[in-house]
Amino acid sequence: MSVVKINAISVPEGMGGELEKRFGARAKMVETMPGFEGFEMLRPVSGETRYFIYTRWADEESFQNWVKSQAFGQGHAQADGPRPVAQGADLLAFEVVDLG
Image 1 (cartoon, rainbow, N blue to C red):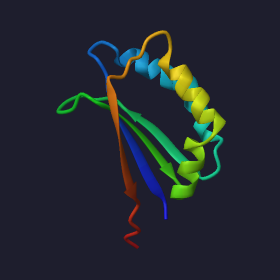
Image 2 (image 1 turned 90 degrees about the vertical axis):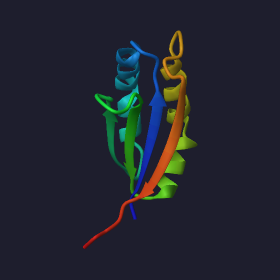
Image 3 (image 1 turned 180 degrees about the horizontal axis):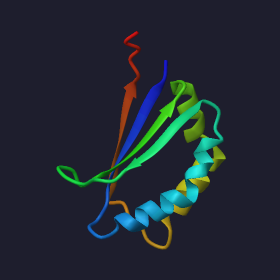
């Protein structure tokens, strides 16, 4: 059963462009991971101020292997850049329901 992880990131006003740039620079890292199915970055436009980073995985084990990987550590170290752009984040977790 596929799982979805959504990282809800609080970003100070005016820093969204920098967050997008940093994610763009490292987005390809996750695509090589076994069990990875998809990635989207959602920019807030109304009713929400947080960015949502959506990833879909074949299963929980695949996601956990990503979190424990060297690429994850390197990508998140690069994401910090010269100064942090996130004020906080919450990880939301879901299972994909097969309605068939």
